[in-house]
Length: 291
Image 1 (cartoon, rainbow, N blue to C red):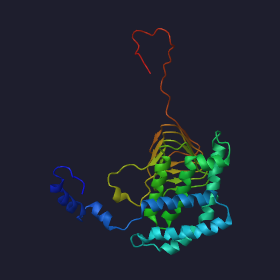
Image 2: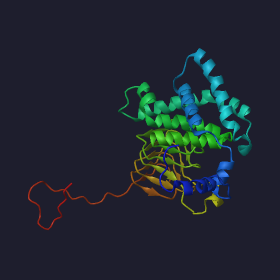
Image 3: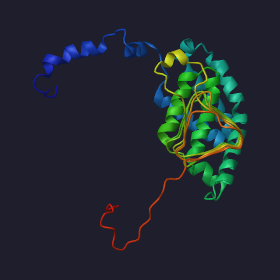
């Protein structure tokens, strides 16, 4: 046996006993609940995402779809009692919904192409745009979330978040032709509702007002609603379940908003006064901005 650090023999067994003990704390309760394997869930997510985004060969689909359904059943088996779901029935429902998810993603890709002048082709968007990967995973996870597979759908959402920087809760409802430009730092909460043809930019938060009593408000509408044709620019924060952004409105960058906005509104922060100086000798009393 390799040499142990001085004193380890004295603390090893007590430490093992303490870590192995079950108690009434949250981590002990979590360990007692059978859970979905994160690594397997991520592998399954990536494969089913590729199938809906890119696979068109009938022979491949004929082999892939049953394999994906079988893996989905295995993933759900460990939480079936906890979530009160039938893995086989849920897998069949999920597979039957894949064509509709693919149709929605096709419209999302079109919205990205129309909304981003830097886009040169549909293929570029599918393979290179982080927002499309995040939205694809969200639409898959949202379907599972609605069927009761909440643990798996949360793993899927967190995988997309880690990969793209876009954090969309699987419970959020997102309409047709959704486009997130750039996307880093976007947060969309569980009860957010987003209409059709909505475009948002990086750093946007659709969040909840923090009540510090989370379990008491669980199940209520806590996140904003964006109606059709809304644009939200970078860094805007929109909070609260009663906050409805009316159809066709534009929310400017860095706006903080906690109340409803009528249709066709323009919400902006008034520009601060700017002082622009040349590179010549400066006023002796002026600050020296060495940037």
